[in-house]
Image 1 (cartoon, rainbow, N blue to C red):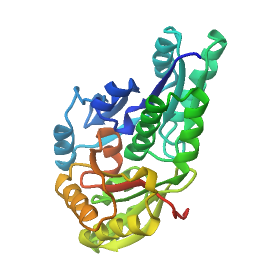
Image 2: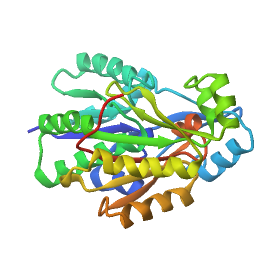
Image 3: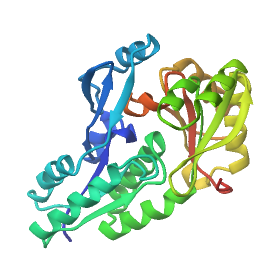
Length: 294
């Protein structure tokens, strides 16, 4: 059986510890703070998240750019030259052109390496949800000695049960990214509206509810865990946050106190996703039983 390598993009927010533990390769992405260009890596060595969010809160413009086919070709070919196949699980095509870039690179490389395999899986989620699925797959692959096709099947089937709910603190960032209109941003901010957002099964953002006040928004996130029901074999809730550790810790405490999960982990949202959701965002992500598509 040929060896294979698991590859994702940096928006999966996979920790350096898990990257090393499971041998996951991460493709960096470009983001901008003001007029300066940076690349996000798992260890954020070019620019710390603290510096990024401080700049964003101070009013500097933040944006990101998708990974190009040439960048994927460079990263994929390193692995192919090692004699390994590739399973790539990346940012949803409903949110970015990055997945399409990976497919272009894979198609070209397959002509050059006909004996190797590259499978690009289009995620229906992003950020911590994307990383959650991928780390679970890597863990199962290591523990159960799963082959290439078994890992692909696991990712493709499990991702359709992932539940992701998040609240945003800064409507202006969503406006700049074209996710909501300028009028909605102005009215929402004036009324202290916190939109609750999820992704549908095409990987596109959808507004699930509009809640007034951050406290009610956080309660909504916790209620969704109970409503969607966590699958027993995946008793883990990930709490993602963009420069909002205080809220993340509160979510974690309440989830544990209410007995909704035995395991809650907190993950940081990096500059690429943070460019669009803004400082203050919080999310809960888990594998659920009763998720209803929006």
